[in-house]
Image 1: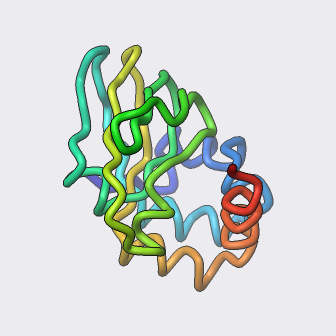
Image 2: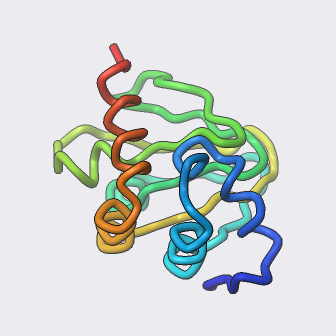
Length: 133
């Protein structure tokens, strides 16, 4: 499900970490590429589902599990999956919804298109990756 510029998620994009510094045109472009997905408490994303996508949480919380260990609890504005898309590692990552919510999802192709057209997103994700232990 794609969303249009009139969709309420577009105004939310500017408030989410990776997209805070994007121009209005960049936000519209991201809005055309990202798919909003609703999740319920207790639902899970498997390794295969996570490995192919970049996720940005709009509302709700998810526990991200990496190689069998809790990696992070991700809430609104938080994101995960980009490192697997960009580095192609064999790391096992899954997620469990701790509450109901919504996330924006982009496959590798969409994420790369965003990184090419919105350099601020690339800079943000690079900074986040470098800050991780």
